[in-house]
Image 1 (cartoon, rainbow, N blue to C red):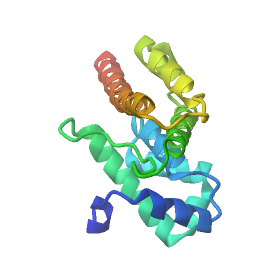
Image 2: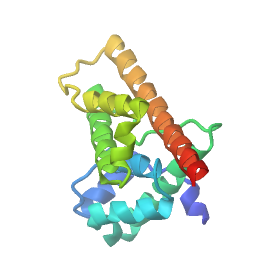
Image 3: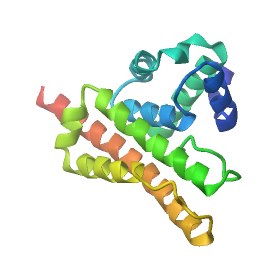
Image 4: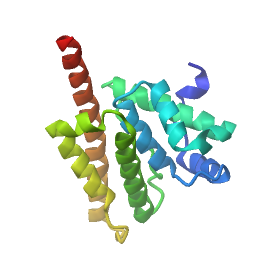
Amino acid sequence: MNEKQHFWPDYELFDHQLFVASTPFSPAYIHGMISAMLCVATPEEAGKSIEKEIPSLGQSGVVNELFNALLINTKMDLENDQRAFRLMLPSDEESLVQRVEGVTNWCEGFLQGISCTNMSGLLNDNPIVKEVLADIEQIKEASLEVQEGEENEKDFMEIVEFIKVSVMLVYAQVIEQQVKAKQLH
């Protein structure tokens, strides 16, 4: 793994590069897809699946570099319980409305990523994962009519933390299911 793959991409830079590459998705959406697919697949499989879903990712060297860095960092976040799982979202300096929009895009990408995997049926059969996916679906429907304010800021931060824990829970459930499946064979 080269050094460029160790940096966490800047949201605004990635967003600009996606726009330049005519990619209709936000970095938050793409990270949601990456997170979902990495819960059930290797980085190589996830990367190929996402590039098949969003072909414009591979058309720009800069976008491809940022995408690969995000893919590798996300996998490291999932595998290392000592690292906090991060979400690719607009910075805290952006308005609450923009950050909420980022969260809803992230959730949409995550749900799309789950639906693109060949394990979506198996995941929906797991009651814990099914509940997490239903919660993420509700968050995705969040209103963008959010008012700035300390209470809404606090609620936003709680939702972000909930999503982080939820992703780690889905990842742990998939690992557990894979271990059980191997024991049966």
